[in-house]
Length: 138
Length: 143
Image (cartoon, rainbow over all chains, first blue to last red; front, side):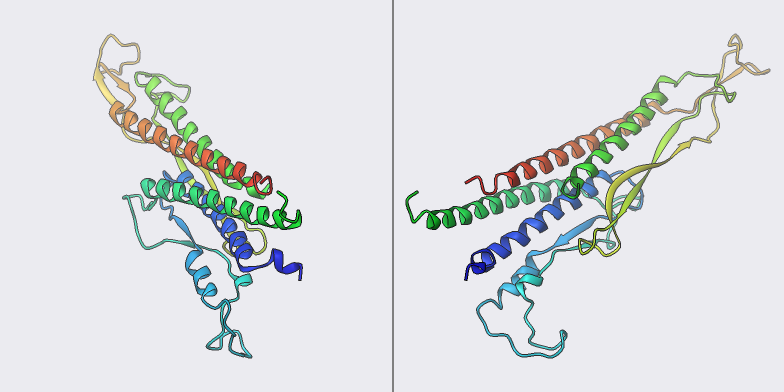
């Protein structure tokens, strides 16, 4: 089945990972732009734990359920989405702002590396496909 | 375009911090200004920032609104009493010989300036990070 080439777990995870990393970059830029805004609360993106939860179910038969909130229903990989949350729990300064510039910078650098790594992996996957399409000649 | 929103957000941060720097430079330049169009000494000005929000595209990010960077909500004018200096020969001196100078603390302006500069740099770094990510995405499929 040709669709399997483009929708296997690795491709799907990479696709969603790239989406999440792009969103995380946007959120970091937003936090940094508002570093001097009074009462601003930082946002963060959660993705990895959600992906992990759905990958645990890959290759296992899911329980039959009749309702989305039934026990035993595995999160399907295709439905995994990153989520943006706002952190109202803390305050860094007396003006109510809770952007920690060091933390944002470190997160941004890590996110960038992650994005580059995922881009490279997508390239490798396409390279393998190309190799197969060319019958191993290149 | 949607994917360049991170860069637009950083750009809004750059604009806002630059505006703040303009105000600080204006405050420092007018530290000895005793007459203005409104009458009286110059009054210190400072920028008030506010988060700017955009409507989210369907199915992306938070339902409702997502962050769109920062905007200058207002310029607040200092209302504290002017600094009185005894200078009877000053043309703007009052009947008792006191001239009213703006109540500007140069140390505070300097600290604000450094804060604005650092925030500006942080936004530049974020902008460069976004740019290199987008460039990297263009490499997909080049193999």
